[in-house]
Image (cartoon, rainbow, N blue to C red; front, side, top):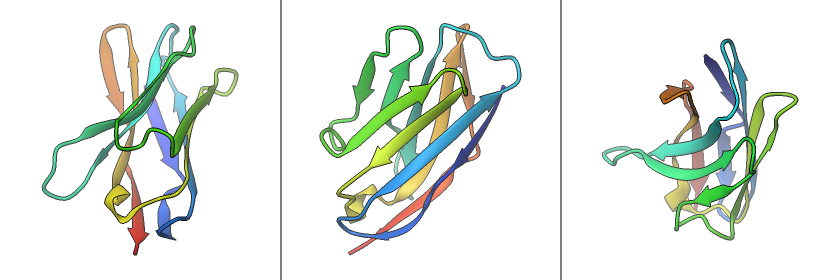
Length: 115
């Protein structure tokens, strides 16, 4: 399974960014796709995830109400709409896919929020 993420960049506080991640290769359903992030010197934490069949979403506490995860199963793509960004959101964001009891990770995309 390959995960190709895009959409990171530099934005001012209060701004918005949209991340995308396309899955390819030996992809199966059901699965869960999501985003994690890791800031320098910190652990990798869940940002948001979404299940393929039920559409059930799960968000990290710090992003609830600001970020929205969605997916297009016909395109094997997951999106993360990030609004009202804060400097604390600065991190490398990693796309994740869980299927058949295995985790797969994308290469990471940098998101930097300036104050």
